[in-house]
Image (cartoon, rainbow, N blue to C red):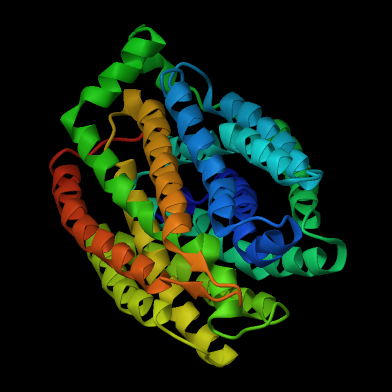
Length: 413
């Protein structure tokens, strides 16, 4: 297949708009981490309460993903994308006007109910429209949203938070999400070829069928562990950097920006590597690199800012390798008729697992009166253990996918 055939103008639009949607969703979640130091102080809440703010999104997203899974293959995916993205915008707006802890907790639940489903719809669209041979490259661009959120979103968000308060980043997300919503209405074609394969089962029967297949259960189990790492370490990342590593709040935007720039460069390259060298080898390499650096990072004390930046940069290369390769591998697990349901349940599993991990992290980590976080290295060791087990699980998924490759419906014009 030629490059011209694989990447038409419309294909470029599809990848770009899906990547931008991922950017807004990820930024909405990730912005809580660097705002953690401010929220703990301004809302006068404990680390455990902050953990619940983070996990509230995850739990509601998990519930929504499970409820939507039975219907995911019964509707045009473009219409589903519009519906859930509209709800996400509303929930984020509520976060931007939240006056206290309990309202913020409620707003995060609303945001999760809608935002948590969008990722599964995006991955179902990618799987429907792009062949496995190029899916790593597509995933590399879409998952680059993590890096873009660091380069553009987090520094700007932190700047606005320092200038106008912690509400400002959420209102910024709303401001950039509305034009994306309009762009989908304007140019994105229906994605509904899967409807011809629907057997007419009820939503509940379709859900139970998807939940009962051994092939799918293996993928869900791997996703459970894949979600552990980020949700355990990320929520307290900024507080750890400030109170344990000795960074200032003004230095945090630089850390996120420099790390994100390198991640933007390496993301698409990693996607190409996973297409050429294989998804699983890239996943193993990224996991081994991440394990080493997680142990080092979580055990550090006062550290110069450029040393923190250097380690974070390499660490995110490892994390990006895991994300891109595992997403491409997991997309090949479901049959065409079950893709929406599988992606919805898989997203639900990831969100709920992450919610428990975040809540557990809030119970393990203790903030001293001086602000320092204790027991953070314990989280690092738990993350490393989950990575080791995931390497084994992804090996069996890789073998399964190679034995039973799944076709796409059609390439987009």
